[in-house]
Image 1 (cartoon, one colour):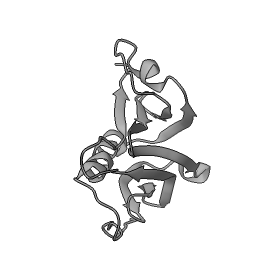
Image 2 (tube, helix red, strand yellow):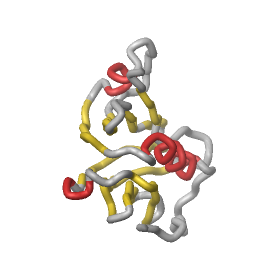
Image 3 (cartoon, one colour):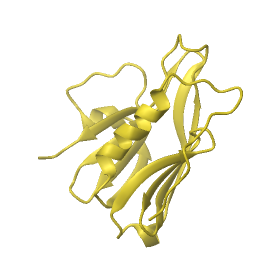
Length: 147
C-alpha cells in the first residue's frame, strides 16, 4: 500500500486548517472508486450544480468516477489569497486500480490520489492564505451525484 508522510508547511506558509480539510473532502469523495476521466475547464460550477449561482469564478477540474459521480475542484481567490490547480498528471496505467487514499507533499503543493500500486492522479496546486487569515482560500469541492 502506498503511503506518504504527514505533510508539513514551509517557514513562510500559514494555514488555518483549510488545506487539510480540502484533502479530507477530496478523499471522502474519491476513495473506493476508480477514475474514469479528468477534465479541466470553465463553468465547472454550473456543470455540476446548475441551480447554484457562483459569482467568484468557476474554472476548475472535474474528476469523473466509475459510479458516475463527478468531483469538481474549483479554484478560489480573494485579494492576495488563492488556491488553483495548476496541472495534473493522470497515470493511465493505474486507473484500473481502486483509489485507497489522498495525500499531499511539499507543503500541500503536490497532491497524490493513490491506489495500492501507486499514484493514479497527481495534482500540482498553487495556494496562499494571503494575509493570514483574513481572506478566503482553498478549493471549493463540489460533488455531483447523478443518482
